[in-house]
Length: 120
Image 1 (cartoon, rainbow, N blue to C red):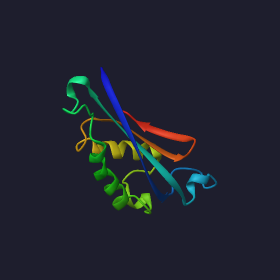
Image 2: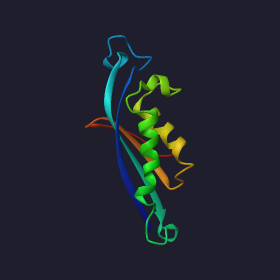
Image 3: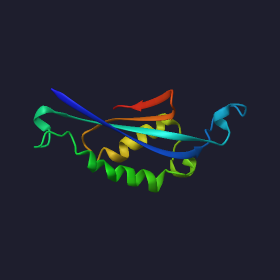
Image 4: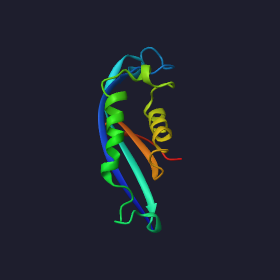
């Protein structure tokens, strides 16, 4: 039996996507109110003694990192790749899967109707 938990985080940032036609809206400098969702999972035998996949309080380290590195920043200056939602999800996963080995996916939303997910 596998248990999954998720937690959402929010931040605001700007970006500009390279490689698009000049008239494309995403080629222009613009910003989003991003929502990041981390999903963590563990099998029944791997739950913490109290029955948690991971204590939600442990995820506060991610929020501090998000606030210090991404919030109110220009993502082109922060990320080494074109700062698409897809690349951001993969980058966050690779960065945080060491700290949270239970991490199974990262989802990034730029608008209330759109999500990109990285699930290796």
